[in-house]
Image (tube, rainbow, N blue to C red):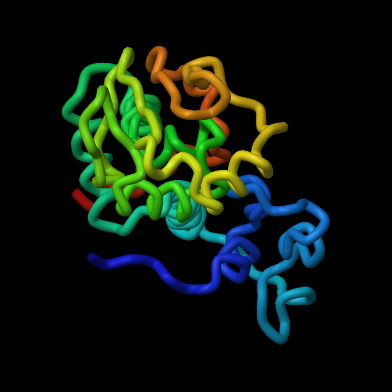
Length: 210
């Protein structure tokens, strides 16, 4: 399966997104906060004019980075949101936030979207009592996700718990017990989703190319 394996810190610097926003990294070690300019020889001094197209493309790239999406996945989510009733941008964000890997991250059961995807792919979780190993499956309000008992004591899982104890869990996610799982309570409102993108720009980007 295709994956984005490039250096994430460099991509975060290019898009201006602190790495600590999309993972549990120490903010003091965040490459964007330490060097808030694009990578490269002229990153700190370059003066670049940004066109309307570049602004929309940038927002789309930020969205893909937050959720670890490939272009085909991002476009597919937009097309589904456009077919759905309601505001397309809001529906798009709700669709992406309902993914299993995104909710695992929001609940603090993993330290980054990449780790959340890895946990899911390796079969660490059960959804409503059934094994789930597809990160993109979409949960419905009321669904419960729990670690398989055989994986709960693994060092990587315990390390994730240790680093995420202080993480603020959004209201649409309920952590079960001491971290053995989570419940998807309801669809989130846009202001509750901790993803800093301008979704109307993303809608415009794809609408102009459909």
